[in-house]
Image (cartoon, rainbow, N blue to C red):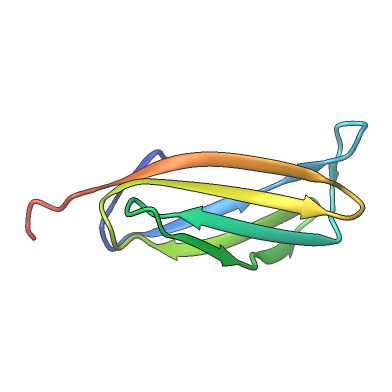
Length: 94
């Protein structure tokens, strides 16, 4: 995943979970929390994409400059979490 985006870009957040053997696996329930640069925390349900592997995705419209953080959490069969950050840079035209 890129680490810097422009305002107005769609940022695709991706989460994957692994079982005890290290293989990609599915979780019963997956949630996604996104923390905006202003500190607001939003909880959403990511879309499940199963294309030979278990992948969860969410498309976020980058509307605010600064650092975002996000956390995919799986509960049930696979209990795991994956967290990352990315930045949205200010436009020179606004």
